[in-house]
Length: 272
Image (tube, rainbow, N blue to C red; front, top):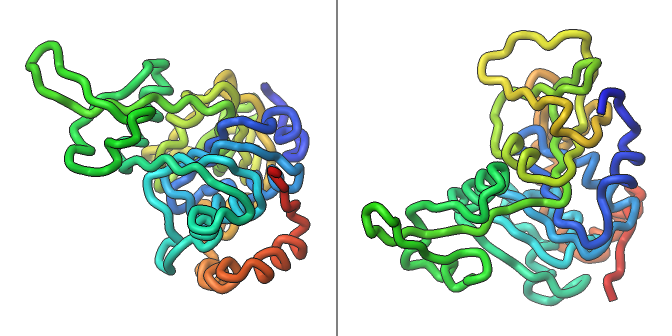
């Protein structure tokens, strides 16, 4: 992969019905534009993986794109609940949603195991919580050296991971900086990876703590300025706090939500 491709083409080629899809980014660099393109193309029966579902998965769930969700915290940050997620869990609207919940540490370790192509990760945690009842993704192992019983979490290996970043160079390498979450691990754990970027440059600037993703781990790069809105991209944009507030009212009511989706040319998918 060396030349940027239009986002619509990247999604059409690499995101398929029934895929496990991770759209990662922590606080900023959340790939909203890519998520909206997934919805516009009417993808269905997805398993969505994300540390914090945020508005991005509230929207995809409400649009009927997802059958399952794997996450470690669900909420509209600083505002309240994700009402489309709640409606799906409590009322099966627009259809039933299967939920798999981790701790933050557990899901981060599951990504790391996936990136290392290991079957599971080991950590201290989960003891005494009902999360342990999810035996298909969380179990226990005994350390062969100390005899200590530890939690084991099944590795996460998405079919496709999608992230937003600040820069790509002419060779298709990607650079991101600021608050980083598990973007690197999500990309390395996936079979395919799509990155939307603010711009393409001839040479990367120096940034302490920046993450560099080489072109050989990426399937597609698309230039999408402001592709993280209403979140932000450090150095390029600021968070639209007003929209996060507005989303609470939009998402509470099904008709208001569907009107918002229609205004933004987002396709409601029926999984009947």
